[in-house]
Image 1 (tube, one colour):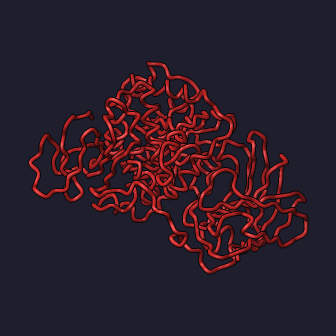
Image 2 (cartoon, rainbow, N blue to C red):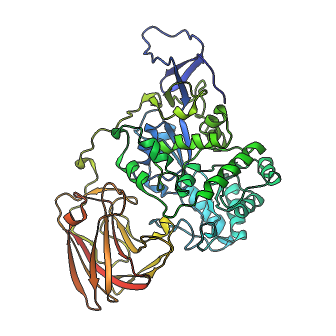
Image 3 (cartoon, rainbow, N blue to C red):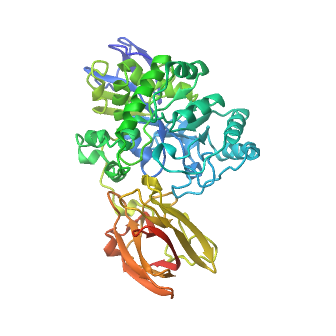
Length: 545
């Protein structure tokens, strides 16, 4: 809520026992000198996507709680127990929307995980009950047709959005919306949404409409850090350049190196003005990064988000409230978000007086989660600490559809994730994987095809030990195609090898050393690239041995 000078914080058994001046502390109690420093409640990143090392990366940079806005929540079976018991698990506490509400082929379906889509209002109640049963803490609804980024994708209609909002409220859950245009935000407001998890970048809201959001009690998570990346602003990478190498994980380095392709600098300027207008109208603004999207890094980009809120006119008290008490209050997290008696001892100690200079928030001296210290630097991780691939050479013969002998199975993969417009469809015909689609212009390095994930979530690295060769059979329309292989880190364009296809089956062998993955694989893609146009080919009997 506000800065308090010269206070002691007494932590005991993972919670805050007392806060005050010159507390009467027991002899022998360990002390941490806070002179010349600022202690904050653990930061709460109100918009992330939890996969890979996101939870571990976030907590090292002071984001002790993360609010995931779309992931396969079933992949974190212990997250509820972790967040409800005292004891540091090595990661930030996770709360999640789980599966999002979207149309078939709509936003959210392009990221390589199965999505239970909706087609009509009558499906909303059952879909929402299923989300709650699966562990969703709130419901996220996509109101997005792609027009803000000059392409078209299917979107839920008005009546279906309204039905999902009503179903969420009937189940006692918040409903939040993904939007990228002012018109979508106003529609969400009209239909009773509780919060928006992006701010729009197409036009600036007028004061009367901003006041309507405030009157309705709608909160907004603007995700300025990712909008900055879309705009071509490398603020997160600049901040990372000031840190020691051992402070950044391979995943953080990889996502910082990514980009969305063509920059849209006007989006950030408009977004900042919208945040300013909403804030001035009294709308609750919550800090969230949308990490680990390209150009961001989990945890680290939270500090960029704070600086961008300051650019939008927030004073220091308001900036840190947006990253602590604000999201805790909006999402009903009563045990965190402020330093007070009986709250969780999630604390961040930062060098300097942040009220005087909030740009130093990343100069972290210490982090405590549940009262326990968090290591701020990564130790060198040995390859053997990764999950080890089962002793099975055959990945898929496609006799049982798009499944695989281990891992997540097969999914479409296209340049849509980087703002492109290429499309791909997968089908199993006569025991072989058929990959078809169209390579479209609009992205410098277009691709479309299929991807297999060997881990239990997208892009989770798996140790394949001393295996040497990727083998598969292929046939199709004569042209060249590409295998892209992702290793433990995914910086830049992934290593690839090309192969040519004819209308007769042939067996292809590719040495793994040509992909430079050093025995660690997080994804294998079979894709078409240039030239533009339609394509179709078949793949069968994929092996790594």
